[in-house]
Image (cartoon, rainbow, N blue to C red; front, side):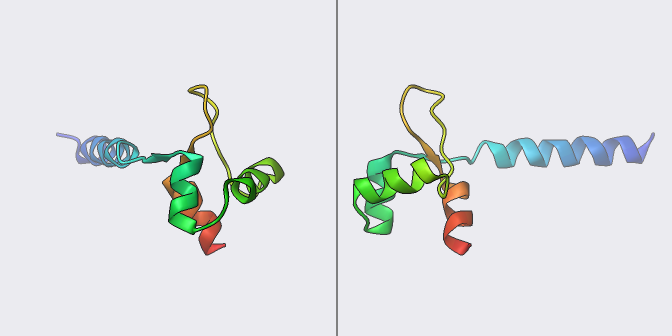
Length: 72
């Protein structure tokens, strides 16, 4: 049996499991978490400082993206 292939399969499986843990936050959630106003968060999103998704018809922020922004 080819162990290199099994290693790659396990690596891909681990990456897929990590993607399942994505937590999407609304602007309100972000405001509560950071103790900032909605207008401040919206300005940060508009300027591109905070990355967001508008895929589902509302503005959502990935918790991983938010942590990256916070850690700078």
